[in-house]
Image (cartoon, rainbow, N blue to C red; front, side, top):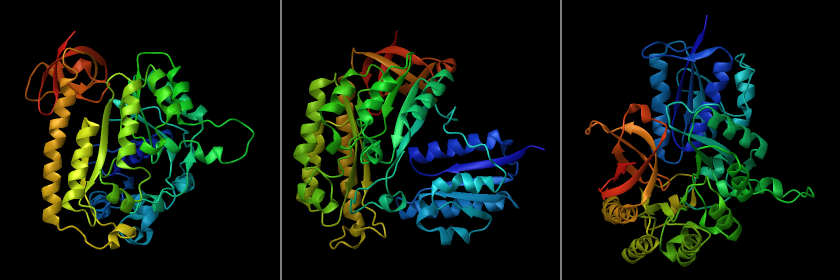
Length: 424
């Protein structure tokens, strides 16, 4: 009799990739996903611990699965499992807590799951596929818990990555997103070892993958401003398949706040890096993360962040009110900002973010677009929604058969949340 499983993912793109890998391992070994209210024999929860809310959602999910799947065994993995395995092990239904994902094959082996794939073949529920290229972070930003739950650097082999990308393209995926905890540190862990071979880094990987033929495109999940240099820019400018959309995390536009965050660049240097990329690439889109209300952030420091965001011309800003994370230095910093001030600053930055987004959308008017169609427009029959190479959300005429395919269009009208396009 076929065994059933249920998988739940909380958190980042890397977690989503890792859950897909586990899912394919289970499928290879005779499992299928439980449907609707059908009870599952095995549950897998991939947790996040970036914030206390993430921890809470993880515990809530585990308890809910135990109620809905009585007698099921639950495997818990992910960053919260690494940070606080004792708490998780006491939750109902928990069979095993994976403290280190490198232990996962051994955990699955105890359940008779012995055929572990080296990569994925599908990315269920999405029109683009994520490919994890590396894991771990060695930086010491004062607000971030991730280096303590994903310590060290661990890069995948270029051969495995290329095989996986080719397989996904053959299976119909038109966009491949290269993801990692610190993507720009890809293969840094191997180049530190004196092997006598020339180093192979992220820009070499981009060049190698770009040689894969076909109607597809690739995207980077993130970059670090400190690692945008001539080699990287040259590779980006010469890669036919790489989308000219990049996500360098600003976090703050204030020099003093950046120092308190222990970031590795100044605001001025950050802007210089973006300008260097604009000089080599055609209208690149930049998205970013900003933490608002970092401890001690003054009105002037926040104003500096607004000013730098406007100079950077971001197409999208992911805005995070500072949340003290126990175990990080910033949680104990003096002058914590009151919630009402953090909320007010989030709203102010959001208003600027919408203005900057619409400004970038306007630059695409009358320009050719390649749109990856992802959904129907529920309020506009005969129209679909997707993203172009710049990751701009686009609405244009289409139908369900366009899902997961490229549609050519031309930018026509700027909306507050998306660009309206004519279909070619």
